[in-house]
Length: 193
Image (tube, rainbow, N blue to C red):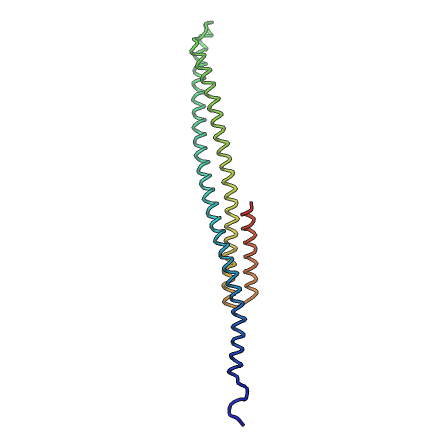
């Protein structure tokens, strides 16, 4: 009877180890590839989230500046209105006496009324421009939230991918892929809107 077994177990063990390494290696490569793709798209989504937030802040700041300008114009409008009222009040004693008011008084009234209309038109234009910038900023903030949600989903997908690689669990990897897909849908929806 031989002291060592007839079948070489060392070669069998090596073959089994190689097969396990090859199958596990394939799985890990797939996880690494999908996680890298998700990370790349997450980086793009994070850049878009940041840029839309920055653009929205710039537009809101511009809207605030336009509101200040419009408020200044309305104050100027009121000042001209007061001057017009004073000119009209100065005309009343002349009319009470049955006399004709001086010509420059009537000219002042006409001038103030015309200036008021011009100022009103300018103020309303500034308000329309302010409203447009504010609406555009609100739209960008809405997009920012969509991009930020996509980034959050991508980050969870990346974390699940790492967990799948550590545990060699395909179900966790599929969860990672699913969340990455949902994140991609959020990203695409915001990118196309």
